[in-house]
Image (cartoon, rainbow, N blue to C red; front, side, top):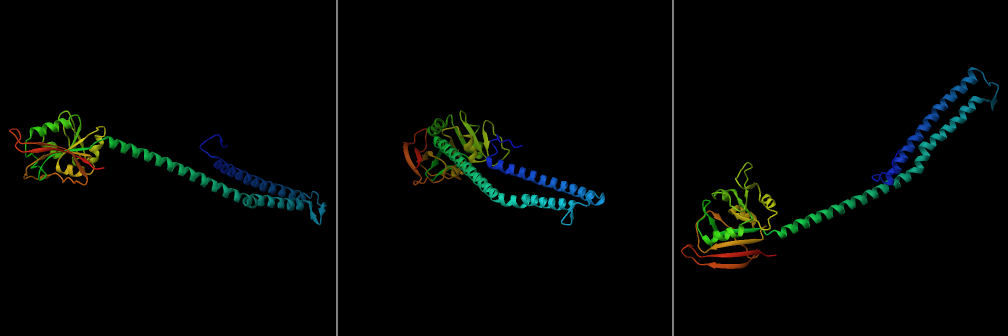
Length: 296
């Protein structure tokens, strides 16, 4: 018995199931008809020819049992025709229409699901875009005139105002760095969330989050409105295309070194602020604090 109240089964599917049940009942009736025909035919012929009952009763020179079997046989043939030929002719067009309707309904459902998925994808993309817009990914770096930023994993200069600026800007934020940069420091930077990128799967660092890609680093920093990328050279190279801002300390001197900061392309970046600092007793070199913003 089909429960028509079930909303998960549409009307077309119910009709197909009911037709299938109807066909089973028709074939059962035909089968019972055939068995009953055999029984009655055998019984009639036995009475007529073996027990000689009604032997004298004939029509057109044929016994009464012959006519019963003969006429019933035609009824059986007619029943057979109705079940396997007439029904098929009548219902073929109906089944074809039902199939067409089912395909149409399923197509509508598929289109509806596609639209829902497109809407969900669009909402998710807009959400990610909005989230990214709210996040200002910032590179902070000190580089010489020839873009050298270090040698043998060590700083080449010591500029107290630069260190103070670095501390003030990054305090309370995520600082993203490569393993070698982290290992060049005596310990994790305090009052900041240290995020270390390394290819070593089993790398452990105290008071720091260890990830295996820049993408992972940005993901763990997603709640920070301004995560800072602090080096080294390889990490800077990977970050240039995805960063929104560069806080550069330009040391006005050329140095020898093995770590180079990538060239800042003026077609992609625009200088928004510059403060010149002259050398003094605490600062051996002239330097400038320069802020770049990515062109939109």
